[in-house]
Image (cartoon, rainbow, N blue to C red):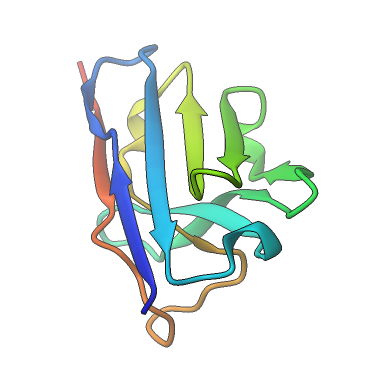
Length: 117
């Protein structure tokens, strides 16, 4: 069965950085485009960054130049390096296959990121 375990969240001040990690199992990881999503309080879940099986990346406009998604097809992990964090980045962050749907698809517990002074 699919299992996605996100980690690395925390509390940081504006301008700070965090690196999130996701361990995936139960999927054909190397053949799956992966993504990081986030859901802020009271808002819909949104796609933050996508990485294809070939390593091509795409980012939502507000995080371009600050966030970097990467994948390790040996360890079956996907990471999100986040620099220059701002209060508007505060959210629960999830990893999943690209194009995952809420609530139809399985989702992990996510990892909380809080950016505040």
